[in-house]
Length: 168
Image 1 (cartoon, rainbow, N blue to C red):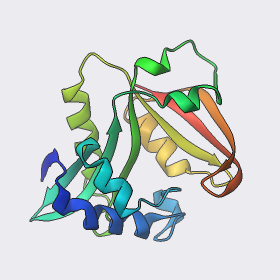
Image 2 (tube, rainbow, N blue to C red):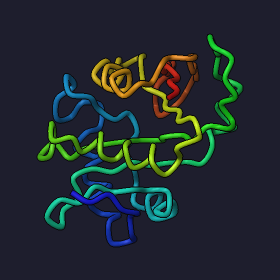
Image 3 (tube, rainbow, N blue to C red):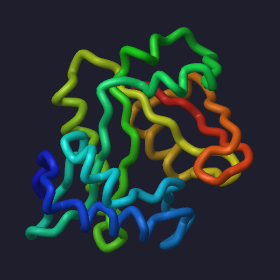
Image 4 (cartoon, rainbow, N blue to C red):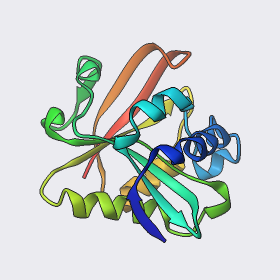
């Protein structure tokens, strides 16, 4: 399996994986996505995506932002003093269900850790209205710890959205 920067030709496969994992479409016990990626969004931000390739197919992807989103800082309540604005932010990580349980997400994260060895990495994981417990457990296994909570109204079609903020 090879981890590399995504290219424009990867957009369709990234979007397809996103759709299959939306709100637990495949199996909520294995984790899920709350945000479906649209082609135009992936196309616009393709330089922020990394993909795991296995035999020419995309096994998974990780969408990385150089900073925790400034527009979310207002809605983030910290339980630990951390400068979120200086963290590398994982916007989304997803594995094609056909490649589940093969270490794809771990390889993607290991690539990020090696690219940014001296920076803290942050991620938000949904807790309400849908609780993504498998993702929380997985991130804790990777050494992430909860440092805060994000609470937003009218976000991604949810009246009240909540997520735990994790840092490694």
